Image (cartoon, rainbow, N blue to C red; front, side, top):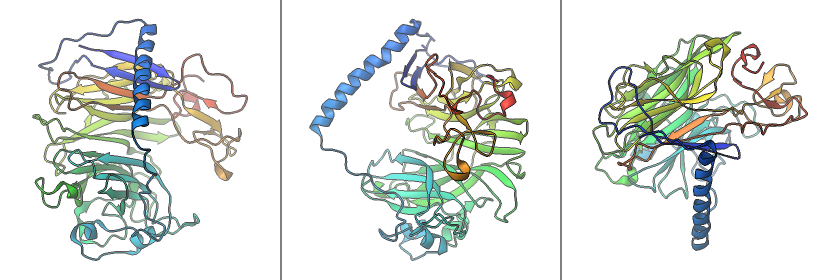
Length: 467
């Protein structure tokens, strides 16, 4: 059976898919009979708003019967109080350890961005957050500190998010703790965290990393996965789940060319099978590989690896996008029967003869060992905010001073992206839920300024489909 429900509410769209399969290497087995939802476009638009109305009513009723949410909690203790930043080694063993980076992080109030958070399925009181943490790079006033590079934060709560202990994933520049040797990496920075738990007290953190520890212009473009475990094993008290850093290792390396040239990996995604079935505990990791980032732009494809031994080793990278090109933003969903779905955005690109922006997916019915050919779930009209920089050229984000744009508007980088998930406890249905943020066709109006939206934002102007 295949059901697809699409609704665009404001500028947010939700798609529910139950896909058909055509496997590249292994014929799928034990699959339910496909059936597409065949309602009209109007019916498709009516289904979810009705459900949303019912959900909204339920939420209003629930709010009336519960106390207000507690105040927001800061994850980074970088104001000189609240314990500061703590090494994971000290957190686990109780042995004293600190270094210049941790001390600076405890008071620098450096910026953080691209956050991630994940809740332990065995104990919802255990919450771990992460971000691109610049605490060793910048001081509180924004001036350069220079003790290290941007690195993945590790922010741990054992009281359901009421408070957090702040740390960094071991292996950062300046880390002399005993856990530093457990990081088998070759770069000076890390960023773009993605997090996922298994059902046995393990937390997995994925990252992309670039800069050369020697300070050269090389951009390695690696992607890696770190593993945190319960120090007392899967049978230990769940309050210690995901506490001890045990390893990080590269799962794919870039070409180390300068200035993002050559082969570069980015846009990571991670998920773990928590179904309790034959694939339980498998780790799935995907990313976009960019090549040839020069005056003519780049090509990008989606790659995938898996681990069947709790992150000790990973498979060789598998290219999922054999027949579609210029694709980014992968995400991973695992359904209740252990099937794996990788969704991503396909860009309209005159170089690859693709005139459609769309959501695509590949599916696996054998625990990520092989995948179907790519299929289009839903074409859409993208929303890629764009302006003209005061310094000339197209800008995908605008701010103040050197980052300002001709329109005077301030906005962050934010092209249409795709996110997907599934209910791993639903054993009866192979439903994958996909959310994305397109434009609503026919609703755009001229801004009267240089600000607007273009198709294929990441390409040079001459390759835009609408030029």
